[in-house]
Length: 239
Length: 350
Image (cartoon, rainbow over all chains, first blue to last red; front, side, top):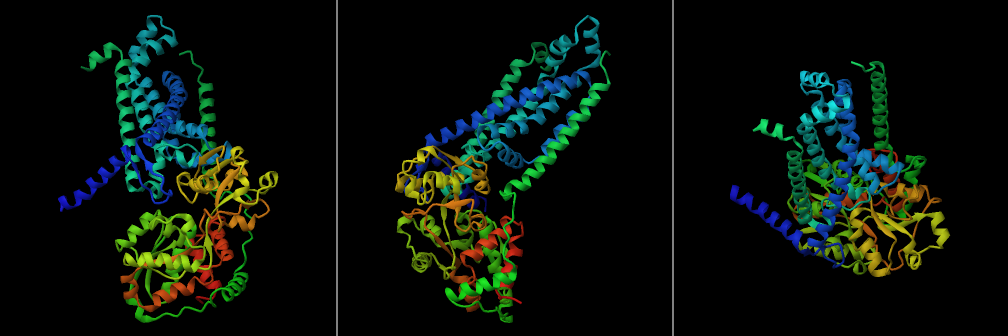
């Protein structure tokens, strides 16, 4: 049973890998071949570009708000509530709304993806800062630190792992969702996935594989960044 | 603590209000964007008018619609009618399903199968009994014909497709009166500005114009690839968009040209606003719908199967199909409701 059902699956994967590296014949293009390394690379780079920009925008928006409310210790309802509520907004609805107002294209897509990226970063930044040991903060205040110094020298370093885990969650959400970009004027790897008519089952699977690989690359890169940003003392403590 | 407690609370309330508003707006956006027309005064014809219309058209084309009678013998036979995943196909799938039910079959529908590749695979695997396909799509996508090799008449195209299907143990029933094709659409004002009537007229102008189409359009020979290859056109840019936005990008002024379908209800109800260019080099083959089934199912289901399907589609002229599309796409009826209304108005069922 398992050997029989495993075989076609492996064959599908073989076809998808083939699609990534070599152009293939398509029924609907009038003889023009599709896929291949050049096209895959081009679409993958677009997907990375739009994802990176959206992630940066999300961080620029979410981290300061999270720091502000986290430091003050108020607005928990807001930070968590906003985070959870905005997860309920369907991404396609956001794109459709923005498309109606500002039109389709790179900007629309970036804004929509950034909105998707904000909640995890905001929630985790708030929580990370808010959960810093209160006596530690009082001690810092006691030795004469200003509120800004407390935030910068005490709270942020302690909250780095939490903030970064929010960033990592967002990055996965964004890069995976960037596959719907071809519906909003930007050709990403989603082109292969959305257009089975043109690219065939091999193209669909190839697109999914490359998106998954990109997500892993983002994850590892951000994990590395997190290690570097975490202060030496905390890293030693963790060991 | 030297923080003022009142102001953050105020800010919090404001932000929650803003969030609620944003959610409200986006919810509305999701709904209205897909309709792509705000002033939906499509004024579709009342059932009585439809009867007249179908009656006339029916006489003109192949014969008059006759009421479907149920044969209790058919009850033992289970049929599953499929469709691809867009409104026109779903309406057709429902029309065939409900007609077969009226003929006494134990029929159900399995709509939204995805692309033609998926639909054909599902049919070959025996998971559906049959589904409606455009003859032109079958010839180009399944049997590798170039668009210019697709016969222009409905009957020759059906015969050619049927001959190919027969080799694979499948069978295609006779074509519908209406045909659907891709078309280059634009605002009437743009057409007047550049004096455009045919696609060939775009020569020398297309470099200044942007073309929007579904993502797959870029590579398809019956879409952008064909416009480039056979007309030698180069456009300022091609932008992929969701198929549902094909009219709103024109209305919003983002797209100069947009790929439309000849059966779109907007072309009938808003013909003062949108026009399509004549495809003078026949890059977009017009496809009449043929019902594709497997020979095995057709044999088991008996002669009522084929006769019911060929009978029920007699009333499906371009005008009727546009109206049915309007009911679903603009007025948000379900495909099943639209199909039921058609069967009743055309006199197939009581």
